[in-house]
Structure formats: C-alpha cells, structure tokens
Image (tube, rainbow, N blue to C red):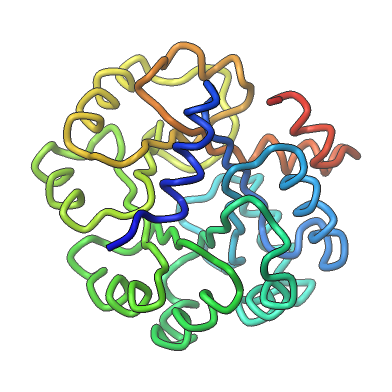
Length: 255
C-alpha cells in the first residue's frame, strides 16, 4: 500500500525543520459562506493538514468552545452531506490534506461505502472518529480504505502499550495523541506525564505523531522536541475568530 498523503504532508513539514500544523475548524463555522474563506486562509497560512469538524448534537469529546461552535453550525444547517458536496466542488484547490473529524453516528447513517466514495470525490484523505472503538472499527476502515481514505488512530495518557500495539497493526496516516484526560479546549499547561507517554508512542508506531487537545500557542510545542511531528489546534482558532479575527492572522503566529 502506498504512503498516505497525510504521512507525506507531515514528513514534508518535518523535512523543512518544522512541526506540521493541523488546524481544526467545524464545517460551516462561523457561517456557511465564510467557512470556505477561512479554509482558504488556513491553507495559504501554512496548514499541512486541515481537520474539518462534522457537527453533531452530542459531541462527547469536545469542550465548550468546539461544542458551541458545532451546535451553531447545526442550527445553520451544516451536515455531512453539505460538507462533502461543497468540498467536491473545490477538489484540488488546497495544498493541505483534508481530514474529517466526526462521531460515528452521522458516518454510519450516511452509509460507509458511500462515505468512502464521496470522501474520495471530495478530496478528503482521512477521518477521525473519537467514539469508535478499535474493536468496532473494522467495517469503517475497510470501507474507507477501498477509496484510499485513512481512519486515524487516537491514543492518550491512559492507553496501555499492548493496546497501542493493536492500533499500530491497522494505523494509517498519523497517530493522534490526546494530551489530556478530558475534552478539547485551550489550556495554559499540559500534563508532565505526556513526554513519557509520547516516548512510548514513538516506540510502538512507525507513523508521525500529532499532539492535540489543549494546544494554544506555538511555544507549548518546544518542550516536546522530536517526540511529536505535528500539532492540532482548534479551540484557540475558534476563539480567535469569534473575537473578530480570522484564520490568516491566527496562522501568522505559527509561521
């Protein structure tokens, strides 16, 4: 199997001496029209991968910032079909690779085979599903793999080594390391235990490692050195846009 475009984008950034940047924005935020302006700015601002949230009514892994943004998008009529349709119209427009982050229910209701086909047609390279256990992920992995779409593994502070090894057997794209035991959201500090757990992840997986949940500033990344290859940030970006900023000015901080 050929190397994932997600792996390639991260390794390309690392070859330039940088951590790959993975901003997260809910689909349709702050409104349906402006969302694609923000997407353009994230791409032009140096994003290597852009994570697009699929709004859901019960986002169990999301903190208050992402949860409220997702609920606003639902109220405005954003759904998985709309996201894929609009992305398909823009396929090939972005240098950054695209990933969808969503909960299993909307994906399952959409139909897994149709999902893989439509994600491929929309130029989406991967999918993050925080409420899909490894033991139940086989059908989705197989359906999406047929169209070259990766299902991204999530591991965290409480993931045993043996379970990491089980994930490593099916992992593609990159490994998403969840930095805290809790929901998404900006934090002024991250747990001390992260470094030792990241070292474990590096030993088990051959893929790039992305650190997410709680990332607020580029300065937070310096303490991790070669233990991480990429950084995911969402709540800080959403807060910045809500405060009147835009993705271009936010990404300038990370240049």
